[in-house]
Image 1 (cartoon, rainbow, N blue to C red):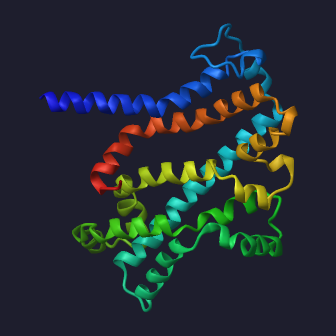
Image 2: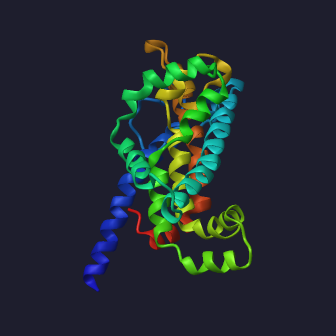
Image 3: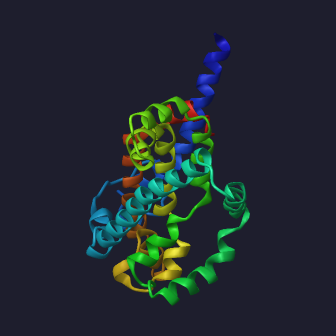
Length: 266
């Protein structure tokens, strides 16, 4: 019993350690300009001036762009990756093993090595400086396909057999039976894909040069301008940009824990 208490206390302390930088971020957002670099756990005089200054039309537009891109990529990627993983795990067709091996091998290729050819392809297709250039290249990720493939390897075949006896087509079988039962895998991957797209900075910076398509990460980076950087506005903007991520996690926390228990993802 004593060991359990010590472990619990240790976990609480580790949790506080991880949450402390987040607390500092939000607390600093309520500081005045003169207090920004003053080391303190609480502002001497709390003010909303920095948050009000951060809430500009350009910032709101960048938040909207990030939400649109992240949600679109996450939803479409979940459907495409689930379909691909299911086909590779449950169907028989020539070259299946070679195809799966090729897809998984792309996990070993660093993203930075394909940025230039990927940009050249997008430029040739005429989708740079547009939502298409931000969204379409983000669909393809072997990580989701691999995890769905592993999940569907243990999918109960009796359900498929029963559906086929009832005259259910493969497409209807997937969308009405397989996909709804894939929730333990979909929830963790949804959070991972949303966070990955939301926090992506390098690709949106490369593929887009128009301010109207800036994502929030690019917008925040553009606020940094040497000695003229408005640090209070930058910190407040970063705090506001983190709010959608916290809302997503709080809404899906229970489902995430259940998904981890069911799939063993670490």
